[in-house]
Amino acid sequence: MEQTIAPPASIRGVVAPAGDKSISHRAAIFNAIAGGEATVENFQQGADCKATLRCLRALGVDWRLDESGVLLIRGAGLGGLREATSVLNCGNSGTTIRIMSGLLAGQPCFSVLTGDASIRDRPMARVIKPLTSMGARISARDRNNKAPIAISGGDLTGITYDMPVASAQVKTAILLAGLFADGETSVSEPTTTRDHTERMLRAMGADISFGEGPRITVRPSSHDLSPLSLRVPGDISSAAPWLVLGAIHPDAEIRVTGVGVNPTRTGIVDALQAMGADIRLEEERTWGAEPVADVVVRSSKLQNTVVSGDLIPRSIDELPLIALAACFAEGETVIRDAGELQFKESDRIKTTVNELKKMGADIEARPDGFVIRGPRRLKSANVSSHRDHRIAMMLAVAGAVAQGETAVRAADAVAVSYPRFWQDYDKLTRR
Image 1 (cartoon, rainbow, N blue to C red):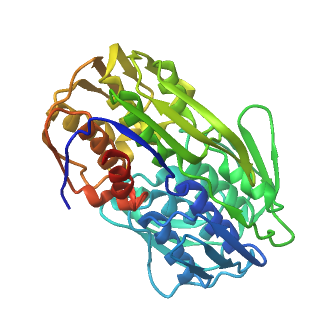
Image 2: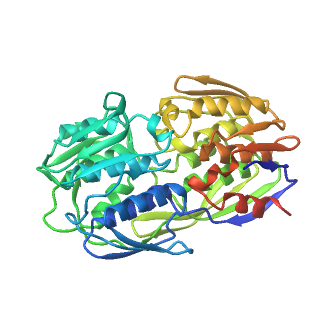
Image 3: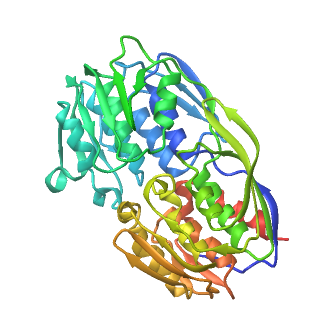
């Protein structure tokens, strides 16, 4: 699908983003091993989360998802999953394949996990290594580093593991495996990553505790987890395109409602505020264990900044959008410590630089990020998402502030995490 974008003269409106993808994945997987039924409202209905649901059904989990985004799921208990009769296809979802690897490592059955071409090219050794050290028998392509992944699970022993790279997916996989292991399992992160797993497992009755620094310890459970019904907050990664659009468009005011503002995820807000964006949180409240707010953004005059260190894991999915915002900021903006971008649905360092350069951006790639010089008015171009949902949304925002009409190829990639993205774009920009 190709989408043509013409810049609107002004932008006014209210939009509610899709449900949080990270929380939706975890709500489905954790409730699948709970002892009872749960209702999950505002479940994210993108392709990634649906891949997780299909894998769970193949493992014997009963669920129903209606068109309004309400998921009804009946947990099979900690020991109730059955061996799948076929390969588990994770589609384009790195979250699915990594978290499911941790779950299946603790199950006394044989499983094979695979995905599309992008998933089969992404590094999996970072999750395979700690799981094999716990006793799981795992084999994979390319020297145990690439999917398909074959897992013979069960009979695990708890470990103390210092993660070399910050990854909420790997952390979650190890903690899930730790629920089925003999003894304690302790994980330490080099920097704090999103903590949805810890919040949710604690709410479900898991024996989980926190030590000095970013260290989390889980102990095997003698009983099933309690089912957890919740309303999923709006995904801040899906809100991010509107936050950047509101800040860089010359005549804009956008309210994004019901957004999850967990402090481990709000790097995009902090980065934009550091650049001088007129952005604020209103109507702050709590949904379950997660903080939620409406986020209001208005047209802003931006300044350069440095995005690095602990801010990176809190904004990793939004860094292409921050790079776009930097095109409109005065001075040189540096984004570093983000080498992980090379291993997403596309090499996001390469794709961000290549596509924004087509539009006239002064941006250069670094091994761990970008250098962007601004302000620079963008021009229309024919660009491509490279089948990456985050790049598709970033280019849509770029087209909305460029001179002339921009054509985005493979624009339907947004369906991975935000199926109604283009409808919401039209709602905000058509006046």
